[in-house]
Image (cartoon, rainbow, N blue to C red; front, side, top):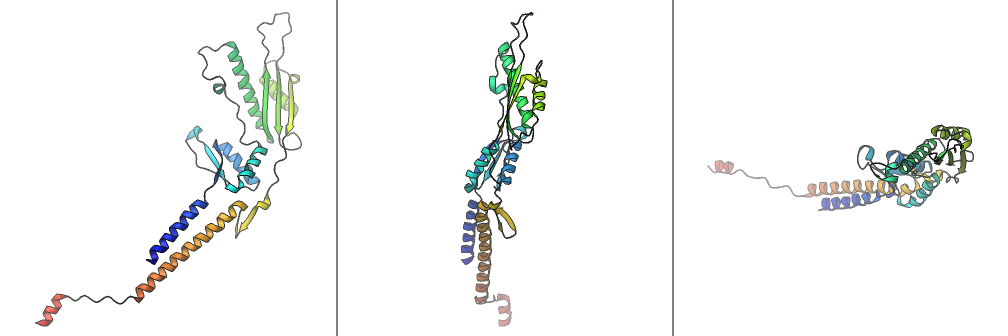
Length: 269
C-alpha cells in the first residue's frame, strides 16, 4: 500500500514537472535561418530561447521559437529593435498571381521592377549591420520617345536601416551595386538614404543567475530549482517506500513449511 502511494505521489510530481516545461510561443512559421537568427539575438540579450522541431521537410520546413512566459514582453522588445524576423519581399507569384498566359507589357515591366528591387534589397541586407534595405527602381517608358528626343534615364532610391551610430556600408559601393544592375543607370542616378535604428536593449547580463554550477536566465531559475527539488523528492519517496516494504517483510511471521504427504505416509508405516 505504501509503495503504491509513493508511486502515485511520484506520478503527480512527474506531471507537475511536465507543466514546468511549458513555454510560450514567441514566433512560428519561420525558416531555419530566421529561427536561428532570433535565438542568437535573444541569447545575446540574456533571454533563453529554444528552437522547436521542424514542421514539414525540405525547403518547406518551418520552425517555432519559444521562451519562458515571463520573458515574452522583453523578447518581443528585442525582436522589434532588431527588426526580426526579417521582412521578405514578395515574389512575382505573390504580387501578380498566375496572371494570364500572355502577360501585357505593363505586367512584364512591373514584374521586372519588383523582382529587381527585391533582389537588390536582399543583397544589401547581406551586409553586416544592415537591418533592412528597400530599393525603388524607376524605369522610364521609352516606347514613345522619338529619335530626336533625349532618352530619359532610369533612377533608383535606396533606403537602408542600419544598426549603430555610423553606416556599416560605403555609399559609393551601394550606388555602384544598384547602378550595375540596371541598364544605362549611372552612380548619379542612385539616391541613398541611411537611417540609424534605435539603440538595442542593453545586454542583460544581470538576468543570468547561477543555480549551483549551472548558469541560467532568471526566468528559468525557478523552474530549474523546482525540477531539481522535485527529482530529489521523488528519489526520497522511492527510498522510503523500499524501506517500508523491507521492514514489513522482515517483521512478518515466517510462513509454515509445507509437509509432503508421501513422507507422512512412510512414517506411519
